[in-house]
Length: 377
Image 1 (cartoon, rainbow, N blue to C red):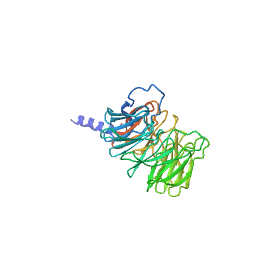
Image 2 (spheres, rainbow, N blue to C red):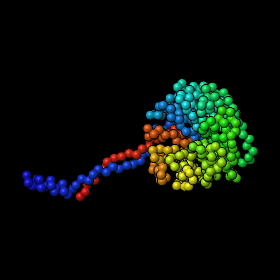
Image 3 (cartoon, rainbow, N blue to C red):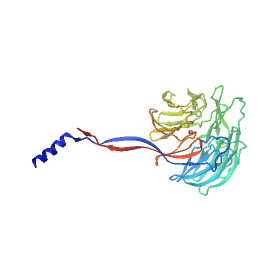
Image 4 (cartoon, one colour):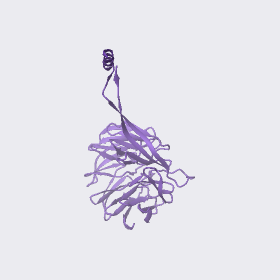
């Protein structure tokens, strides 16, 4: 018996168990992928870039070929489909059970999501590649002809319109500014490099400022980001500007513009540029905090995701970057790149996007923990 106890004591002293250590790993996997096209595209390649819409248990995605499709968020199974000639590139706005989306055929659509029925359409005679915004029952959007429309969201009737005459002979970038709404005014960027404020009810112009001085492209295709009495606005190949909301005067600007809409997190402003960069600035001064450059094309609009930023490379991957440092935490390669702004469901830890090929993806992105036991000899 004494010998047996001695052996146990010896083993206990010679091989002691250390405390459990938790190992963390950020994992990005695909739950499902689905082709959004009703049939194979035999024509020219299209730019698939609509941000998916999360509505109850559906993920609604539009492709630039043949229209909208609703997929179940768990399985990716098709629930319904709405054919739209020439497809959809613009983002959509959802209020309760109504979806509003513009199309490449020049029509704005009001859709009942409970029945998947088109309630009304409005023809602008020009393709719509900019996302609409709904405020106080009025739908505002910019058409490809640089006209701003205000429609009654209930029936699609025109309330007012503003037609801008672009005298510039320069080429423009394919895209359009989603209006921003604040305190009874809307703010819209135009392809001639101007930012304009309108009275939301009447369409009366409040102020206008010319921003982009680029000699090649003057486009302002990003959504104005309103923060208190300031507006942050990105301009293609030029600068990002901080402008007074009430007076339309430049507060600060810094080099490195693009078409993406900036996002705010605390005192940081994050945006992407036309040179394939994603940049974090101090919002009060425009001072750079960090900058990361993609080697696979330009980056899509950034989105916040659990202390990170997710954005897509036009010729590469969906990226997950640390919010404070810009360090790469994880990525996913879909093939043919990512042009769309990702849509995130923070509760389910899912990210949804459409690839350049027209495939819809449901990506699970999460930090997984596991305990490890180490033995000291």
